[in-house]
Length: 100
Image 1 (cartoon, helix red, strand yellow):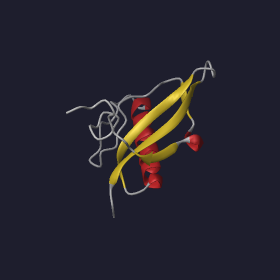
Image 2: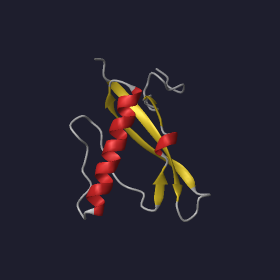
Image 3: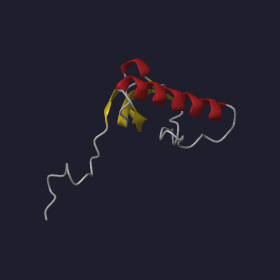
Image 4: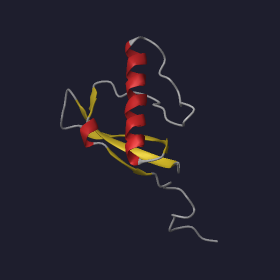
């Protein structure tokens, strides 16, 4: 099993103003895009359940997945979520303005 870091991008919209939309991003270690999507959904559900019960949102889990916060009043569009390998935007191997 080869583990790597994945990014899961979930479109969201404001339930009171559907013209306002964005993307909620999750990252963590998984062995496939499908597993990453499943874990992102699980940690979101756990965060929402904790908040609804009046508890603190769980932090990062031992497998590196977690939700740092919720956007209350915004609807997650899970069927439109996309998952793929995460590419560090500040990695020196991907920066075009890096000079020695």
